[in-house]
Image (tube, rainbow, N blue to C red):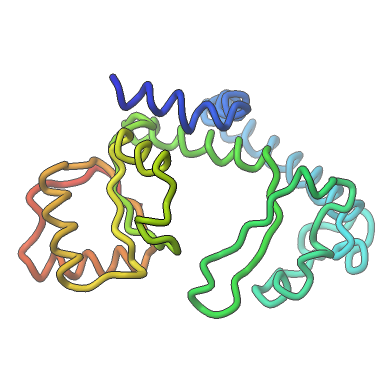
Length: 222
C-alpha cells in the first residue's frame, strides 16, 4: 500500500527511536492491573527524584525525597515566567528544541523537548491508532491551526501530506463556506479519523448538525 510505504519512509523514518517505546507500551498494555500499578509507582518516583535533583525550579521549591503532593502545580504563567529554570541544565541546548503553543489565549507557552519526547509521542500515536482498530497510516482529517499559508509551506511537506491522505482545514482561516467545503471533501474521501482542537471540532459538529449530518461515520474523532 503506497500510503503505508510513505508513512514508513517519512514520519516513521524521521522518528527512528519510536519502536522501542512502542514495544514498551505494548507490554504495559498487556500487563495486569497490579503490574501496571507497580510500574506506574516506580516511574513516578524516579521522575520526581530526577526533577528535584536536576531541574532548578524544583530544586528551589521541593526537598529531596518529597512526594508528588509536595510539588507545586505549574500554571500557565509559571511556565511562561520560568522557562529557563524548568529546563534541564545538564543537557546541551543543541539537544533540545523549543516548542510553543499557538498562543490563541494570549502569550504562547514555551517548553523544551528532546528527540526522546518525539520518539515517545510518535510511538504513542502508532499504538493508539492500532488500539482503535486503524493503521497509523490511515487517512486523516485535521481541523488545526496553521500559521503558514499554503504557499509558504515547503513543497515536500505538501507532497507528503497528499500522499499520506491527510486533509486539513485551517481553523485560523475558517468561515461557513470553508466548513461546508471541508464537509463535502470528507464525504468524498471518507477518512476514518477526524482530529482537531476541541473548539474547532465543536464548531464543525455544529455545522454538520445544521446541514443535516454527514454522509458517512468516521471511526475516530479526537
